[in-house]
Length: 128
Image 1: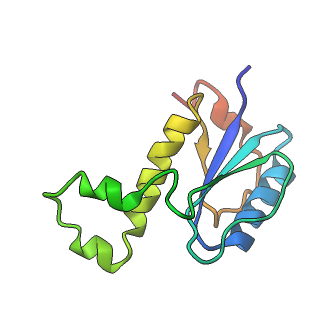
Image 2 (image 1 turned 90 degrees about the vertical axis):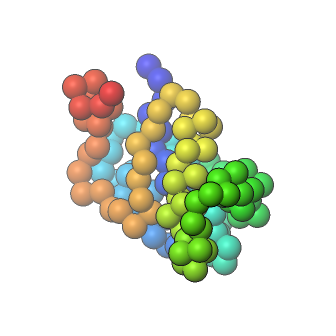
Image 3 (image 1 turned 135 degrees about the vertical axis):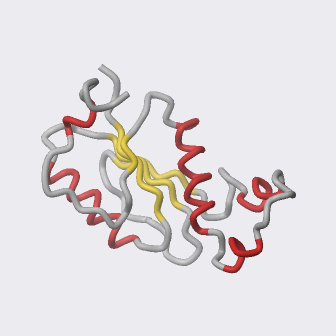
């Protein structure tokens, strides 16, 4: 049986990320590996938690967002840059997670708290 993994893209909200992880542990009987992809520029996720792997992208050493965006010169990035292109950073981070966690994962937002077990999400009837 392959490892069940939950991935969280983290950005400057360590308390929320920790609460999300604790909700997984509280609600789920299964032991999950949790991967935190940290894109923080001010408030990184530094808490050491058993079963949690942190991928440090705080200095864009895993995904260089400016370099990736430069590959698409015909796109209009002006609006994206005005908001620090957060959604595109998130999307590129998830894309990188697909490469780094090839067996698949559940993507969980850092501000999500589980109120029930999510084990059924790995059932082939619900997931492809």
